[in-house]
View: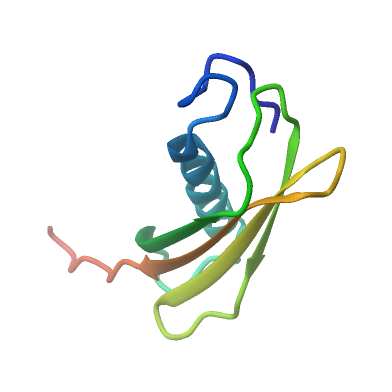
Length: 108
Protein backbone atom coordinates (compact mmCIF):
# COMPACT_ATOMS: atom_id res chain seq x y z
CA UNK A 1 0.00 0.00 0.00
CA UNK A 2 1.39 3.41 -0.94
CA UNK A 3 0.12 6.28 1.21
CA UNK A 4 0.01 9.71 -0.38
CA UNK A 5 -0.14 13.10 1.28
CA UNK A 6 -3.94 13.47 1.03
CA UNK A 7 -4.73 10.82 3.64
CA UNK A 8 -3.31 12.57 6.67
CA UNK A 9 -4.80 13.15 10.08
CA UNK A 10 -1.97 15.09 11.67
CA UNK A 11 -0.08 16.86 8.86
CA UNK A 12 2.62 14.56 7.51
CA UNK A 13 1.16 11.36 8.97
CA UNK A 14 -1.45 8.91 7.67
CA UNK A 15 -4.80 8.97 9.48
CA UNK A 16 -5.12 5.98 11.82
CA UNK A 17 -8.67 5.32 10.67
CA UNK A 18 -7.36 4.64 7.18
CA UNK A 19 -4.80 2.09 8.36
CA UNK A 20 -7.56 0.36 10.39
CA UNK A 21 -9.85 0.36 7.33
CA UNK A 22 -7.12 -1.16 5.17
CA UNK A 23 -6.62 -3.98 7.67
CA UNK A 24 -10.38 -4.59 7.86
CA UNK A 25 -10.67 -4.61 4.06
CA UNK A 26 -7.83 -7.11 3.72
CA UNK A 27 -9.43 -9.33 6.37
CA UNK A 28 -12.60 -9.24 4.25
CA UNK A 29 -10.59 -10.21 1.15
CA UNK A 30 -9.27 -13.27 3.00
CA UNK A 31 -12.84 -14.41 3.71
CA UNK A 32 -13.59 -14.30 -0.03
CA UNK A 33 -10.45 -16.33 -0.85
CA UNK A 34 -11.40 -19.18 1.47
CA UNK A 35 -13.04 -22.31 0.07
CA UNK A 36 -16.82 -22.03 0.01
CA UNK A 37 -18.43 -22.88 3.31
CA UNK A 38 -21.21 -25.48 3.34
CA UNK A 39 -24.37 -23.62 2.39
CA UNK A 40 -22.40 -20.58 1.20
CA UNK A 41 -22.73 -17.49 3.34
CA UNK A 42 -21.26 -14.11 4.01
CA UNK A 43 -18.77 -13.09 6.68
CA UNK A 44 -19.17 -9.97 8.80
CA UNK A 45 -16.67 -8.15 10.99
CA UNK A 46 -17.62 -8.84 14.60
CA UNK A 47 -14.51 -7.39 16.22
CA UNK A 48 -11.59 -5.29 15.04
CA UNK A 49 -8.71 -4.43 17.38
CA UNK A 50 -5.90 -2.16 16.15
CA UNK A 51 -2.61 -1.38 17.89
CA UNK A 52 -0.68 1.54 16.44
CA UNK A 53 3.01 0.75 16.95
CA UNK A 54 4.53 3.74 15.12
CA UNK A 55 3.28 6.81 13.25
CA UNK A 56 2.93 6.21 9.50
CA UNK A 57 4.47 9.11 7.57
CA UNK A 58 2.66 10.14 4.39
CA UNK A 59 4.56 8.85 1.38
CA UNK A 60 5.20 5.51 3.09
CA UNK A 61 4.90 2.28 1.14
CA UNK A 62 3.66 -0.41 3.52
CA UNK A 63 3.46 -4.17 3.31
CA UNK A 64 0.50 -5.81 5.05
CA UNK A 65 0.56 -9.49 5.96
CA UNK A 66 -2.63 -11.29 7.02
CA UNK A 67 -2.87 -14.65 8.75
CA UNK A 68 -6.09 -16.60 9.33
CA UNK A 69 -6.74 -19.43 11.77
CA UNK A 70 -8.85 -22.47 10.92
CA UNK A 71 -12.60 -21.91 11.26
CA UNK A 72 -14.05 -22.41 14.75
CA UNK A 73 -17.70 -23.10 14.05
CA UNK A 74 -18.86 -19.91 12.31
CA UNK A 75 -15.92 -17.87 13.68
CA UNK A 76 -12.78 -16.89 11.80
CA UNK A 77 -9.98 -15.17 13.73
CA UNK A 78 -7.32 -13.26 11.79
CA UNK A 79 -4.33 -11.05 12.48
CA UNK A 80 -2.40 -8.54 10.38
CA UNK A 81 0.89 -6.69 10.56
CA UNK A 82 1.57 -3.53 8.58
CA UNK A 83 5.28 -2.82 8.08
CA UNK A 84 7.25 -0.10 6.36
CA UNK A 85 8.22 -1.82 3.09
CA UNK A 86 11.65 -0.17 3.09
CA UNK A 87 12.80 -0.54 6.68
CA UNK A 88 10.61 -3.42 7.92
CA UNK A 89 9.53 -1.31 10.92
CA UNK A 90 6.28 -2.55 12.45
CA UNK A 91 3.67 0.20 12.09
CA UNK A 92 0.31 -1.40 12.88
CA UNK A 93 -0.91 -4.70 14.29
CA UNK A 94 -4.55 -5.73 14.02
CA UNK A 95 -6.70 -8.63 15.15
CA UNK A 96 -10.18 -9.44 13.98
CA UNK A 97 -13.05 -11.81 14.45
CA UNK A 98 -15.25 -12.44 11.42
CA UNK A 99 -18.47 -14.40 11.78
CA UNK A 100 -20.16 -16.40 9.05
CA UNK A 101 -23.78 -15.31 8.80
CA UNK A 102 -26.40 -17.94 9.43
CA UNK A 103 -28.14 -19.04 6.25
CA UNK A 104 -31.53 -17.43 5.75
CA UNK A 105 -34.48 -19.76 5.54
CA UNK A 106 -35.79 -20.17 2.01
CA UNK A 107 -38.43 -17.66 1.11
CA UNK A 108 -36.94 -14.73 3.06
